[in-house]
Length: 288
Image (tube, rainbow, N blue to C red; front, side, top):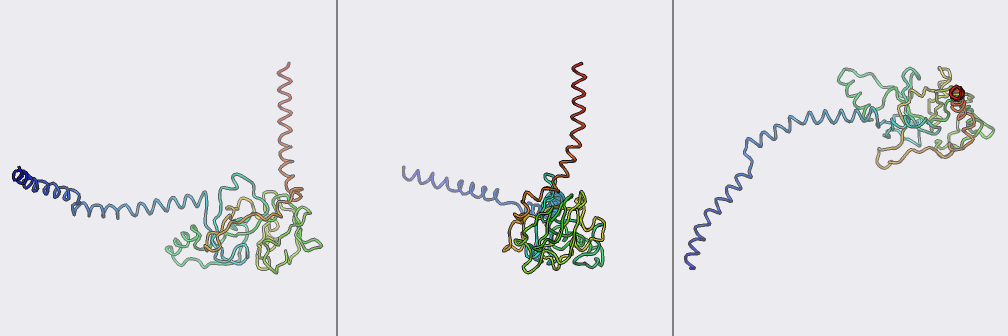
């Protein structure tokens, strides 16, 4: 029995070895298949890159966009060479508020600026400039970033007896964000912000070319709300400065709403009265 089992065992071994060899051969891809896989990857790579760029551009156009800080006008809240993310959806859900740090376009609004970029020397350089601006790598020549001090209807004035800016007669405490050693303003101004416009100022008042520097322009230095791109809400670069950009507490004072907040209320009341009268007439006719 032992010899027979040994013979049968010896007879089985070649079959088992053949099965293992066949399994190994089936697991190994052919050279042609490897080349095809490598070739298909390089063919698909440009498509993947294009899709990624398109998705990134859609996000930056409608949702969030990165912006490069090119000047010292918002120090120390924002430093030169910081990168911030700007929420482009927020003002579809709420109004622009006092204290918001906003990015806006100065095209057809503020000529010149705190920095100037040379025109691209050729179309290729122009393309890379556009890409860099789109992804917050280089600054946009006509984009500005400032803090909203007054909204449409607000009476903004500098300064009171204690050298503070007042909004609707209420002084605002700017110590938490004003650049150390700066006064609220070295220029006198007294303006009622037109409806649909904003009075904006940089936190580094001594170097900021803000609404105070454009009082001779249309709107008396204010900017159109329609030119606002979005609200800067977080610093993302450099990493050691990662932080949110919040609205200072001083802008939460109820007294600030005294005048600025009354404009929409009057408009709403004027719109509501005719509706009430029409409904009343309809009910009287129905009773008859």
